[in-house]
Length: 196
Image: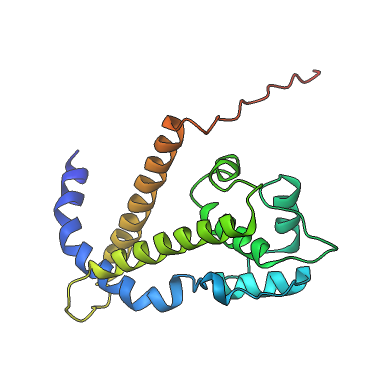
């Protein structure tokens, strides 16, 4: 209990420094998600899609196998003649961004697969607006003072702990909202018997 109280006392002084650092890291951390109009309007092959999505998300984690799995799981529409459209790009960007916080089964309910292009455009626009306002909100909370370097390993640990706690709290909230929603049916675990 003493450590928890100590943590709560230290947290406010560390919080301002964390948020200042977030502003500095924003250019390198937050994905550079394009508006609908900037998504490539021509159909692309898998390798082109992977390169483009990895560029947008500032990662190298998106692979052809992942995209094929999204199609197999019916989380996104299948390509037409092995080519992916602007709609496909929007689905992949939304899926890859959301999957860090919610399970694929939930994404299937949040982003229906049977939407027409206009509906995907509208959904992607709302998604992008939420993404940008959330990133701006996080960055905007930092005081105007110049960012300071962490005062050693202890402060760095506190910053990491704060980010992890914030992430965990929001992930928990998303899970609770899913549980209470009328459209999401939590998948039932399948029990398998093993021959011993």
